[in-house]
Length: 126
Image 1 (cartoon, rainbow, N blue to C red):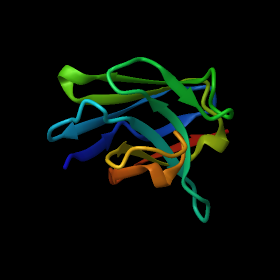
Image 2 (image 1 turned 90 degrees about the vertical axis):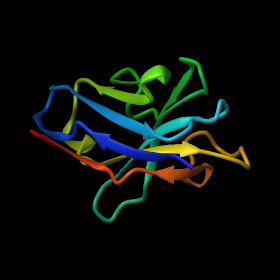
Image 3 (image 1 turned 180 degrees about the vertical axis):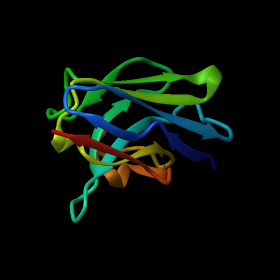
Image 4 (image 1 turned 45 degrees about the horizontal axis):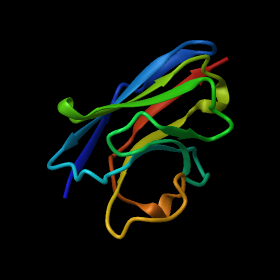
């Protein structure tokens, strides 16, 4: 079992940038996929970016494609989310997630992921 700890959230003006980090504590299985989700007040948790195991192949939610970049540094046990051109509608709590056996399901679906961090708040002002 791994534990996930997010950091890097904060308040920024529209058009600004933030980089979120997710420290992965524990043994990373070679098949483990990571993702970033976000959830606003009263909203559903939505997947916004995911990255394949030991790869830089990524998938993104349409709303963030071209603005956000997910990456991973396996030797450092860290997953990143670089967020550029931030908009007020990006304001949300952001969560890091890891999948696990049994593997399967929609790459950006919450039900696929078994381990979650505690979240980090991102607030974008207009």
